[in-house]
Length: 114
Length: 116
Image 1 (tube, each protein chain N blue to C red):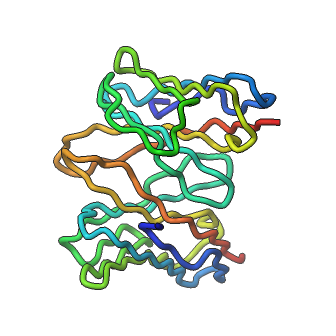
Image 2: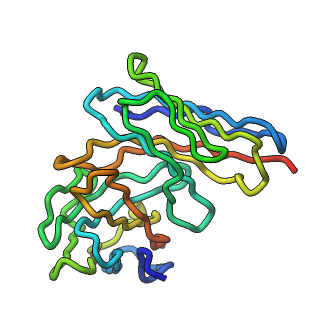
């Protein structure tokens, strides 16, 4: 049973365009939703994260939109650049004094055309 | 560099051999995690430590796998009698639990294991 479902599996976007990656989760007890960026040969690096008490969080060109009732959240990358080409993972966890292992989606391989 | 470090970065071994990986977390972090990542998949949780105590182990962690964090600092992950299905990237992450902001896990570069 996959607890965090991510789509699309791969995405090609023109430079300057908007990249959108979607995720859905099942466990309503999850209370922390990070996005990780991974380049080939590297470990995942935290990009941006959100808690379910807010509907949107923006950091620079990266925005998370969160819909608690639908149990969905998405990552928007504005003005996408070739350097954004990487694999992106959405994830969920139970944080703070409980088991906070991260449940990852399967990843989206993003390629930004120059 | 004060990030999470892992050693070795790459390991090639023959089926049936034992291998051991090391992870050095960020120095003040009290939690340490091991994940496994296969090609085209997201990382999957294996086990984690709170200081030196191993608090949870995934069903993915068979009896051939053992992890230790003897002094609450670095950790080792040993795989005995390796199988071809063990080929994967083994990732270590650390965090400072019980913070009021986020429990951000910082990942190391991983150890890529190839079992021939």
